[in-house]
Amino acid sequence: MKKWIFAVSAAALVLALGLSGCEKAPADSSGSATEVSGTGATAADPATGETPTGSETAGETGGSTTPAQQTIQLTFSGQTLSGAPEGTVVTEDGAFVIVKPGTYELTGDLSNGQLRVRVEKTERVTLIFRNFTASSSTSAPIYLVSADKCVIELADGSVNRLTDAKTYVFSDPTETKPNACLYAGCDLKIKGKGSLIVEGNYNNGIGCKNDLEISNGQITVSAPNNILKGNNSVTVTGGKLVLSGAENDDPNFTKLIESCGALVVADRYCYGSLPGREEIVVQPGQAPLDAIARHYLNVSMCPRFMGQDEMRGRKKYLADLVKEYKADGIIVASNKFCEYWSYERTIDTIVLNRDFGIPVCSIEKEYVNAASGQLRTRFQAFIESVEIKKIQEGARK
Image (cartoon, rainbow, N blue to C red; front, side, top):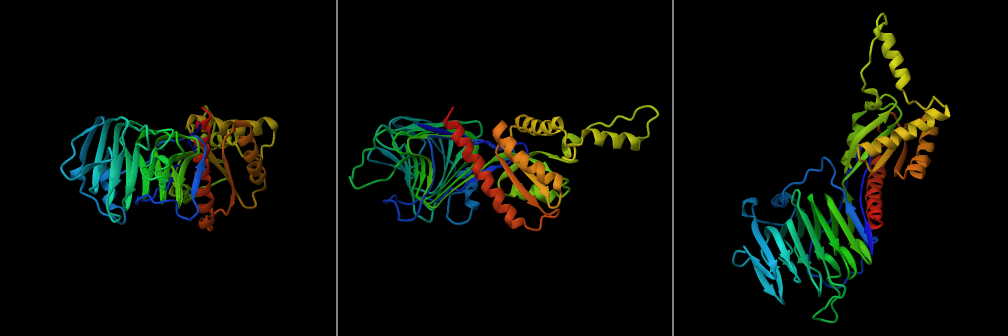
């Protein structure tokens, strides 16, 4: 069984997974599927990841839902359910089926059962997991059959767990869905500041017929086949990054990275915030300008200082920043025609990954970010790869 865990680096990147809507689960379409192989995955909650409440999904494009004040509290105990207003939840083949759009908060333990969502394909449902546990000995505990989109929000501080059967029992031998512990026949988005543990025993961990998006949350997935599988797309966001490189006084560079779903937690440019923001002590009889000049000469980590000790020290400093700020990766950027940093960037890319196991995105850029479109593509790909790496590492733990 595989487990994957996501993480990001000091100049924090936040990664997001794209989730797609639900619809009645027919056999797989002929379209290509996006999937992540492995047995486990953990998506780390970025420090600044804002997550609107489940009821806010009404503001997302398309679909309809009920107002925030109409959140319905559903409490499970074994194979019983309480709190469902008449007409919102029905029973079908021993499963509880939500048949009305809106926001539902789930608590308690659903043992050896199944919760389904079946609403119109123009309607939306939000499920808030608040210390919710569900398991099934014959199928998937959560089956989002049909909707325009389903959103699962992990309540702040909550711990939630889903466990499916090793063998699924289908009423119709020709059926192939669900085939994941958490399966959606529509667009699915998972977000929030809680944790979700998905123990897949049959096939996939989290599966989606359309678009799957994972944003924030501490998500751990194990499965014998694919940890995450979206038939249209899988989008993962929520990580921390450290930035390093030559002189960079353009705040739009950091904004560009964070607009790709990452959080920048630290920077180490030639004269950046680290280690530049330190007290400068003026000694008695010393001119202030002389003190400033000597300070920056001593703390500067410019690659023009080519001694082996200095070079190794710069790599170790970056690795320490990643550890201190709990970052998941590093972006190393050099300005065109800066030969010193071109060499440093190449060495950083090799050494930081080989000796410290830190994912590195290496770029050469103009002093002013003219090619923002190309950079955005690079950053998005790097952020997603970092999150997937965290999933893989979680599988080995």
